[in-house]
Structures are given as C-alpha cells and as structure tokens.
Length: 181
Image (tube, rainbow, N blue to C red; front, side, top):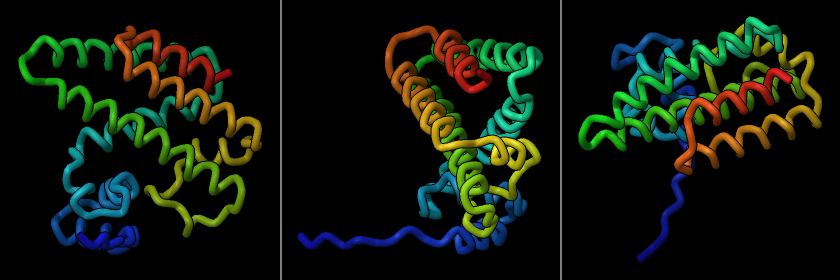
C-alpha cells in the first residue's frame, strides 16, 4: 500500500462546482466552508438544513448577551430538542440525529473560526465560510485571545455533552450561557 496525501480543494473550486450544479453562491460558499476541502463533503450536506442552522446561529450570536438573546437561544434549543426527540422516536434515525449535531458543531466552529480570522487579520479573503455577517463583524471587534480560548472550551464541552446521554436542552443552554456571558 502506498499512502497518497491529497490536499484539500480550494474553497473557490468547491464553490464553482456547486454553483455549476445550481446552488446559490451563498449556499455554495457555506457548504464549501463546512466540507473539509472535499466536493463530496459539500454534496453530502443538506443545503436547506445547513443554511437554516447557519442563519439561526448567526441570528442568536448577533444579540451580544442581551436577555432577549438568552430567550431566543433557549427557544431555539427547545425547538431543536423537540425535533431531535421526534427523530429519536422513529426507527433508524440515529444517523439523522448525528448529522444534525454535526451540522450545528461544524457551523459553530466555522462561524467562530471566520470571526477569529476577522478579529486577528481583518482579511476577508482568508474566510472559509460565506461573507461575514454584521454579527461576525461586531464579534470580531470584541474578541480577545482569552475570549477565544473560553469560546473554544465551551464548544468542547458542548461536543462532549452531545456525545453523552445528557439532556440536549441543558447542554445547549449551558453553551449559550457561556457564549452570552
């Protein structure tokens, strides 16, 4: 056997292939950012669900700790929890539940990664996801290395909690409390 290392495709190549397949530019950019540099990875993602998750996370993160932000985060978590509960009651839905969590985690990682790039460099050409939102630009102005470390720690706890048999609502509520702190 010979190990062949294939580098990830450039984002522009994936976006171009997706737009040729009929995807809107923003959706193509988002899927490319979440694809780990593979066209197949981008095509495996449900574009509507992925865009919906991205937009919801962006909306929630645009509130900056206001009480309304916490209420919105708890409401979203409750809706997500009920959707996951419905999926769990059906047969053979573990892959669907896992795919939903994967989209959420990948979206959060990409959102924060691009926001950190904006905070450190301000260079939009280095972003892996879609063009930055107003929320990302506002967070980029406030981010420090210490805040980034805390956000990554919170995301690690979220991922760990999702891998355990814990209540989904509590896991996400704790994450949002950490972020909105």
